[in-house]
Length: 339
Image (cartoon, rainbow, N blue to C red; front, top):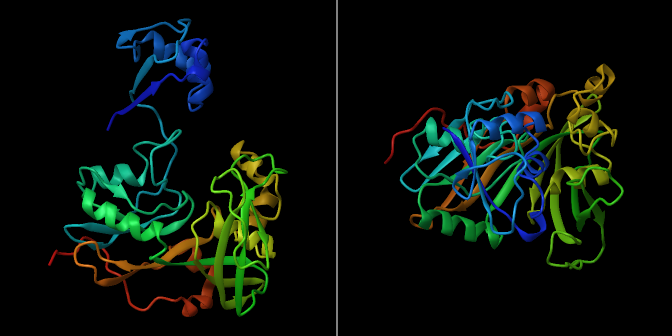
């Protein structure tokens, strides 16, 4: 599929050149590459060819069609857990983004659903991080999407994750607190979890301030300094499980953002991780997996539960701890018949 990006220029983006705007906002191309793309007439300004030096005004429309833009390597091994006329439930592999963004377009779960599984307009009801593996619910039409989204918004969906963490995790732990931006970190998207004894911590109602975060944890097994942990988030905040485990002193194995060294994520972004870094991480991605989901089916409201085993990288590291996985039945693979 060809990627098409349209940007309506906001007042705060005006009075800069086409080249400066594109190079600053879409950093997957260098400025010189953007100059060549503009010269080849792949960028239109208000429907007409433009130049790199043309200045933008508020309300202008920039239209860019990408031709053969290279994308990073990803894992495209998407497995279908369930498929019917209303929803498809898939087991997303690690290192696959859910939605297009940045350098990723065709190398996303959304694109795989369209091109490999022939879904015309897949609506991803829940979203998990690129490195996180596990269950994603895909609605096939607007009614199914609306019903599923409503259940997630009203916390009617039970989500179970498993994680491999550093240290000896307790048998049970209830983490109630607040999530807020980490103002000390040099990474914009990093979040900070703070425990509170208040059953109803203050919320600002915006992502800029503290938000209530609640997760129930259960230690399932431990071996050689690692623990297999089940996490049931009661709220759905950005990086909630990872940031909470980090704050509790049990960082997720392989987590570069909430791991043993706060500078490790920056080294990862610049491809300068050292051999020592990789040894400390144990895995090349965060060991977090969405293992089960329980909700009401959008067709008739019946209670359904879907499960997905963790991928080989986690299974290999957990060894005999895998016997403690909270999975009730073997999931389906391939495309099941509808009925």
